[in-house]
Image 1 (cartoon, rainbow, N blue to C red):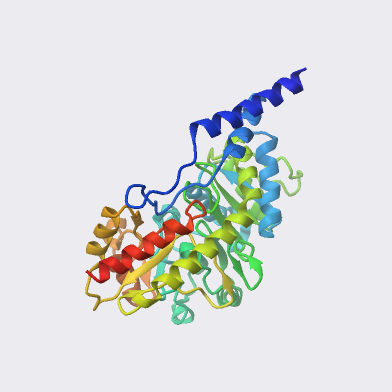
Image 2 (image 1 turned 135 degrees about the vertical axis):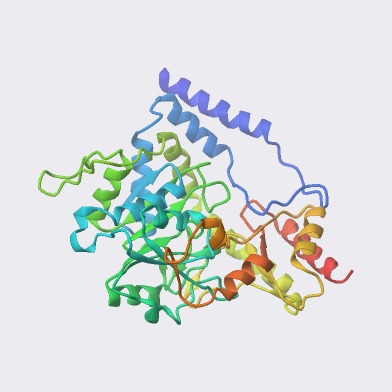
Length: 413
């Protein structure tokens, strides 16, 4: 009887969703085309309702199942679900400061190579632990870390690399992994923007000692919030787990190898996140395919405007799951970035700035608290002249064609 009642509730939930969110045709110029957005349907709401009926709201089987499935999907041994992508970055970097790592433990004053062209959540954990960020420029138009000067920037204090796959485009992982191994550095992949991206046939997030992903709305999959740390190291997994669970020992560790930090965070994700995440994860392959199709459509449509715009370029050997479609307005363009953004927004096309990160002044960094691996010319160009428009799976071909047509109209006015 209870099973049938539960089935009835699920059917009513699906019906409710469809009635509350009726589909309608796109109305050019009236309906906003968002730069980012979550793509979901009644399946996510049914999964959420089904999990909530068990009233297992914090920890539970849905979160555990999601962790296992995410690890399988990304080719890692372990994944640990947390409450946000920012928390994932904090935990990954904090794990490397653990005394359980012995001589490889990061200590205050040690250096971490990173890029300035990224959302601050990659950089702030470095500063929180008294580490020294070594800022490296990026390339245009791939937005990937510039590798040319790295070997010359390594010192005896350089201990780790924490770099993002910006906008979903993988950085040169083969080079960075070889570089990190050659110098004995930890490698953290910030794959927050890159779930579903591939490099040399292998999922992004499976190359580093640690990797992080985000499930914030607008990412490749979403739980509304949430993130995860991935690793194939049993020791690093136990350290992250202990830190995430307010310093408790990993429940899977034995007395000889158990990790138990006296201090930690409370960054567990709710079981309900896992319920939504499992449904979204089943759709990841389709979402990724649609993002790539939408990217191709926009690229082909905007190719004639390359006299004024730098169009994005994928890293050799990669298959990105682009977060959005970034462009850089060239210096000699007849229309500046701000004017272009304003015209697009007035036409109902949402835009967002590419993540250049706050300036060094905004970070409050002073001389000696950071180093530069050369000038940040391209980072500054991105800060001043870049933005992106949407290509997420919720956008139709009609919407994308309208977006591309708006660009052409603006440049021919």
